[in-house]
Length: 632
Image 1: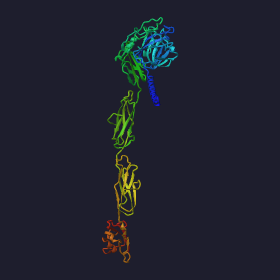
Image 2: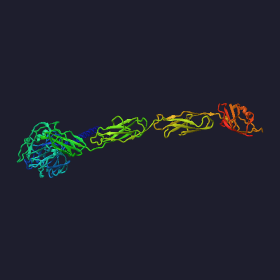
Image 3: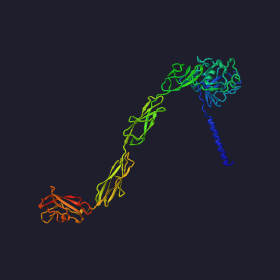
């Protein structure tokens, strides 16, 4: 091969290895079968096969045959013990010590439901010879306490339990009983002999009391189609077992022990609906009433329970444990078996909290706000009643959306829990209150300190605005050119020409209208002709005929005067002089008389009206009135 071919071959080899590795991983990750009481039954036993028993070719003491009503998958573990059972307290089952506890783990293929399988134990529990070649095939064996040989049935009478769970110590077991057998003829621990045992309540009608201590086998129905409970009833019946009197135990052969011709794969029909133990219950209190059917007997599988009558299908039960309690209803004559689970929950208090989106509780009028409720112990289908200011709003949802909030509105929700153990059933959330601001529209205008001005004058412009917010922005423009700073005022200095002024206003007010940048109207500033300063109006004259200031005269360029009127008043408001002719007033003036009468010395006032030829108002020093003193 060349390099490329080698590379391709290695790639394919790697993929193949990975594929088989994945298959191996999947195969070895099979979950074990969880067994319950009655899923496996003992249908044959033979003690003391070899090592001094019936035949030295059998290098084992005991051989047990089982019938399974459930598929036994790879990795399934079962525990066998011949220790005597004493009592149960809660989940702890107490045994007599000093005998064997052995775990068998299925390493072979799945054993289908309805099949018979064998295990052997005693001196060498993993080895079995002779004609019964299937014993312990496909199982690994481990002693949980002591040696493997400690699990050893006494041919003079003993007991054997099938279990699944864990021995925390050699005398304490936590788990499930599956089946039991005693070859002493009675279930009675009595004085505590190693060959005597009590019967766990979980195995009521799921056990066999043998009359032969050494060997016996089930010889009942062959290929029968029935329910599991009917099969178990048949197995329980001693009339369906071989009658062998063991003075010296016989060796197992295909005729007297194996089941290849007696029980092929049996048919397991579903259990009938009648005669059941009632529905499972989820309750909150530690007492309940059962609802079984038919005549039977109650027994406690796990948990605790004090029955008012063990034979009443509607017995009252008190003293239930928190959590799952399992009770078995066994019909009379073992005609049916049903288990009922009573799940006792703790009382829980429902609670609910709400949040809003947006989170901020200061909003603008018309804002869409969504409230979301988060329940605690609300159950599978909680109910929600939203309220605004303690008034119910329609809907039943974990969310509530509105656009009509008003100022100081208060929102909350009332949760109704459907949790099994809710107490009380309702809860009220926190309250969210909102500040709702109205929508505002910013406005802007300009107020100038002067308008009709002289060339070189200064003018200050002030922005008059509303709804500017906390930090409004101002940009001033003179003839559309940006000027000034970010200030509500702007001063134009030494104005030499007509100007147009505006300001651009940016508001940051809450809840402003969509337009937040606006321009003011244009304000125009016009220059006027200020030649009025060429006039001269004296404030004193002395008509005493001495040739100096004998008349009140106005000085100025009469060519600049378009309209003219002057009036002079005494201190009593009487007009003493009036003229509409600027040139006459300039030339002749007022001589201090009125209607030929000499006016007294004192204070007088003047008033002028008119306009210059440029249509600006006639003024003297920007005034149209002034004071005058007459001196004699």
